[in-house]
View (cartoon, rainbow, N blue to C red):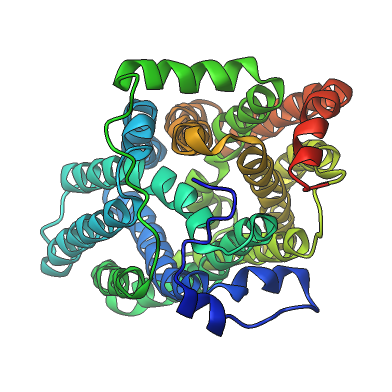
Length: 433
């Protein structure tokens, strides 16, 4: 990719609006990004409806915390197993075609779940199989989508607002999707949520078809697949800021994110609620995350972002134990919103710093590692949390996870000086400080 690549034709650039007031609106100067944002907002709302429906359906069929953890494990383990090998391929393939194909495959998975749930014939094994299939699709779709962002914007300094706005749309969907899903589950069942999710994939498919982007296909490469794979891994390990950012994501993914898997237990058994309670908890989580993403999108530079990341994961490590101790729904909603705010503060900041530091010719490989660190290791955390919750209880399990995040944040904070010394010159050279 060239430094001045916009991913758009002249006509798109000519019609893009100017945004001089609010920093986060800079990303919308690009027609392609506006199409992407609208399509993803609809599609992700459906996906969150499916997520809450799947969790409730599994718990209704099995009454087992281990079963919940197993579904999460099987849904995300393909990202860990395939993500490493997807990167070099995505650095060679046409990203828009890959993303479009993945949407069609995900739609088929949602229709399969809808058909089984509406007929009342869906089994736990079928749910696990569907989750595993979607995980394999996501192993390619996620790094492709992250890498494609830079092709949708006109200027490199719009990258940080675009990444933050991606989180805004993700968490906007997380507010409305679970709440709508909870209400639909209570009234007409889980199958409707699966069907609606299947239909919402059409929005992003149409948006991608309308985009005018420059080709991203680079051909087979000069050094071979294994050499490209080794080069990506070597770069991620040798460059200290990338290594530490990816390591921080591993900690929060394994120890922190399983709290989402355990939420059905808190909703029903700890707080004495139902599917609507679960929807409200996920909605509070999404609201906090949305506020966090908007706050990050208002930033005009990357100065101080690493320190903010360290402080956020430290605070996140304190918020989880507090939620685990709560037995009152209003307090739990407040703490869930706080956890959502802090988790996004960490993950969006890491994404922004990684994308700002990585070389363009290794972008898909590094973003595959990002996906592996953020979601690929999460299934191990989910499965571990499921067994731990059965043995020690969900509150104690969440307490331990928060403590591990706290330790990871303190370690990252201690290394901030060396992080700045290595990353600062790179960011300054690219005009991002």
